[in-house]
Amino acid sequence: MIPIKSESEITIMRTACRIAATVLDRLCRLVAPGVNTYDLDQEGRKLLGSYDARSACFGYQVGSKRFPAYTCLSVNDEIVHGIGTLKRVLQDGDIISVDVCVEYQGFIGDNARTVAVGDIAPARQKLLTVTEEALLKGIQQARPGNRVGAISNAVERAVRPFGYGIIRDFVGHGVGRSMHEAPQIPNFGPASRGERLRPGMTLAIEPMIAEGRSQVVMADDGWTALTVDGLPAAHFEHTVLVTGGDPEILTIPDSGI
Ligand code: MF3
Ligand code: CO
Image (cartoon, rainbow, N blue to C red; front, side, top):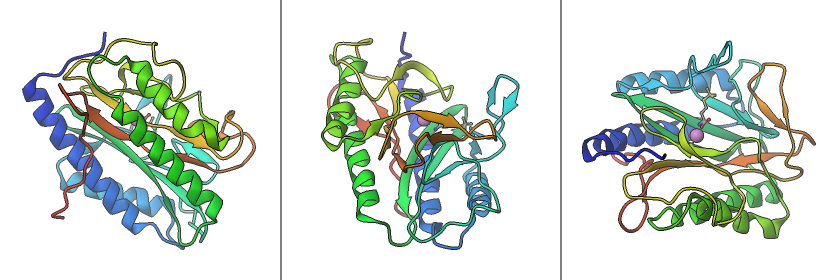
């Protein structure tokens, strides 16, 4: 069963998501050649603190491992869950997925964006544009009456014409009191699959798309997911509220900051 949020829960979700989006926006503005990903992660930690929020990634436990960073910073062939390090100095032409997942007053807001470092090759820009467009197409299907699969199918259809690899090992997810709630939201598959969507559901929709093959390998750090062929991948994510009508994107930054 996919949890339905009450009005008061949605009110806190809105704030959690606005903080997540504002921090993401500010981190993306700091991305530049010469910046290392450890410093970027530390900026994320400080910004979250300034909003009385905390990272939902830091200490996140899978088996006996705990995620050691405050944000996920994934460069080029790193797809998701990259860990900022002093050694990873961003270079002109890189792309970086910045993923900010926050907890505020017991609720989670989750969003990500892949941005260019300096000037990037047209093929990389195309990958970013198509992946973001696929996210927006998926979001448009987050409406009552549709099943979860309508989102998956819309993402897949937006990406297929370009021949990119759709990552299958990671999926979008329900989000609320926990970072990962029901349902799982794959970025492929038939529209008829999954539960029906209802107002009050909050979903993190997040296409992860590779320029080449869709197979994933894990880095030695035990967290970072990489493309098997070393080609770049893009990742865009919003937290979305299913309403009685059009979907509402909750992870919109506070423009006044
Ligand atoms: N936005 C990521 C997700 O949905 C956050 C992962 S945090 C980590 O999975 F701790 F698992 F890295
Ligand atoms: Co997520």
